[in-house]
Image: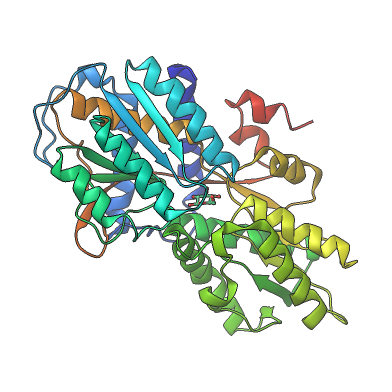
Length: 393
Ligand code: BGC
């Protein structure tokens, strides 16, 4: 991935988001204050667009004291939760490419949704002399002691895409706004219902992601902030009555479990009713929901998604899935490497005004903006992403 393309992509993402802020509702995310978060988007973009070598000032609000840095060819560990969705496979490839291009020696491992395996992989990164360990946790709360062990060994720990909870062993987290993602999913669901199904009221069902993943309740919370008022005024009917995150969550983000739940919702509640829309937390689950509806002989409902996975980009283009949300992996990886470069150069963690309470400390958050994608704006969103643009035919 060349640097110019990453920066063009980031620029396009930020532009697209500023165009959307008028209709997207309040920003919240893991952050404390909406205004601070806006600032952080600008700031994190700036971090990503500056040449690390040109960053000479010590950031005023750096959350960690600048250390002495480390050598240019240092070992960097990357611990991913699984490779079950396209974004994590992309992260595996892009971390390797971008870390090597920046002169580092990467150790990249994925843990197949098994917490003990992820703990062991991180332990071995510590033993192998990693200077920074980047972690996308399977379970946000289960890595406390191994991350504290890393910290004691003088290693920096950066959360990637997901918050690291209940541990002091974290220096910062790079991610896309998670509550904002849920707001975009719900708004797209409403827009799609109006566009595809005409005037309401509408019958809908709700799905959440894996309950151990700290993003999943945030996605759901953001979505419900948009949907709840319309459930309350009767525009939307959740026919099953299942509106709590715990009832709607999909253990391990497992598409087959989501499909089984949709099958039973349809047979239990929709034998004499049409389903008009479904909130889905990501693309894999969206395709499982759509497949279940097709198998049950329902007209395809309006379904939201996340990740802009290739298959779903094709489905959005053909009208089978209404929307997805793009969170470009290359931009998130580039942001992470800018932070690693700052640590290498002895400048500490870059400044950010956004923090999240992880249960035991306020963690610095470096946040990028997610962008909703429908057939109407797909060409624009993917203008700088040739492989996805290629799918829009
Ligand atoms: C990520 C999504 C992904 C999901 C399942 C979430 O934490 O933000 O991009 O689809 O995990 O892997």
